[in-house]
Image 1 (cartoon, one colour):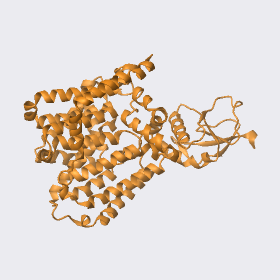
Image 2 (cartoon, one colour):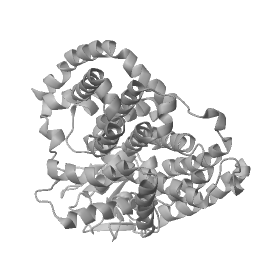
Image 3 (cartoon, one colour):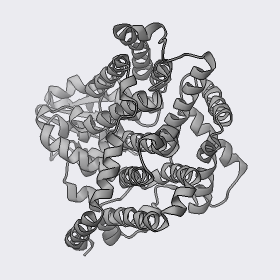
Image 4 (cartoon, rainbow, N blue to C red):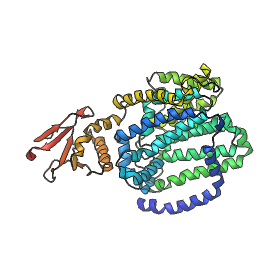
Length: 501
C-alpha cells in the first residue's frame, strides 16, 4: 500500500508544486541570479584559478583510483543503481541524501558505460569545485593570501577531503552552507542585492541542503538565525513578504519529502532509528561536540583548536558576534530533537570556521590586495606550491588516514586484480564483513561483472569454474591461493576447491 501511495502521490505533489512555482517564479529567479552574481568582478585575480585547478586535479585522481567506501557502496546499491522514484520515496537510513541520490541516478544513467566510480562521484566533485570557487571569488576577493592559506588547510583536512570526492551529499551541503553564510553575513552583499534577493537565495539554498539531508537543519538553523539578527529592521518593513516567502519554501521542503512521508511516515525523517538518541544533555556531550568540530578542521588535529581560537578571536574583533550561533545552535537542536547527529553533519561548520580563521591570519599579517605577495604574482607558481601540498595530502590520505569504512575499501583495492580474472565471485558472509560484501557488490556492478553470491554451508549447488571465493575465515578442505591483502585486520583469503586442482 505504501508503494502505491508513494507512486501516485507524486501526481498531486507535482500539480501543487507547479502552482506555487508559478506564483513564486520571480522570487526563485531572483535568488538564483544572486547566487550567480559576482560582486567586485573587476578586482578578480585570475591567479586563484591555479590552486583551484591543482586541488580539483588531486580530487579527480582520488575519484578515479580509489574504490567506493562502504557508505558509498550502500548508497549505490540501494539508490543510485535503481531509479529516481526509489531515491525520492525510500528513506530506510540517513545514507539516502535524496537530492544527491537523484543526481547520481542521472550521472550513472548517462556515464555507466565508463564502468568507473567517477560516474557516481561527479556530483560530489562538481559541488566541491563550486564551493572552492565561491570561497575564492567571494569571501577572498580582496584577500588573495587567504586563498593560499585556505588551500593548505583544506588539503590537510582529510575528513573534509574525504567527502569532497566521495559519492555522498556532504559536498552539496558544504556549498549550500558556505553560499548561505555569505549572503547572510557578508556586508558587501548589501551593496548589490536587496533584502528580497538575499532571503530568496538563502532559503533556496536551505531547501537544496535540507532535501539533500534533514541533518542540514543544523547548518541552516544557525545561518538563518544570523540572517534574522542582521536584517531584523528589513524584516519589520516587509513582514508580509517575509512570512509568505518562508511559508513557500517551508511548503516546498514538505512537498519534496512528501513521497517518503506518505509511504513511510514523517518519523522516518525526524526520528530515524539509525541516528543516536540524546535522552539526557550533559557537559561531556558539549565537549564531544566541540571535539568533533576540531577533528574536522585540519592536520595535525591539535592545530584545529588554534583555528577555532582564531575563529572566535576574529568574530570578536570584527564584532561578528553572530558567528557564535555556530557553537550554540547545534547544542540547542540536540536537546530539542533529542538526537546526537553524526560528526560529519558539521562539515559545513568546519569549512566556515576555516575561512574565518584564514581571514583572521590574513588581517594579522596585513597582506593587501594591491600588492599580492609571493606566489600570487605568478599563477603557475601558485599551482606548483598548492600542488606540493596536494602530493602531501594524497600520500597521507591514501596511505595513513584511517576513518570509518574508507580504510576497508582501500584494503579492497588490493584484490581488484585477481577479481578481474574470474567470471564470478563468491563471498562468505560473516558477522564482521557484511560491509565488505556491500563494497564488493557495488564494485562488481560498476565493473559490469557477475554479482557477488553469498556462500552457504553447502557448496554443491555452485559451479566454481572460473570463480573465486573470498573470505576472512578458513574454509575446510579448500585451498588458499592468496592471502596478501587484509580486511578489518584479518587476512583476506582467496580460495579454490581442492577438487578443481
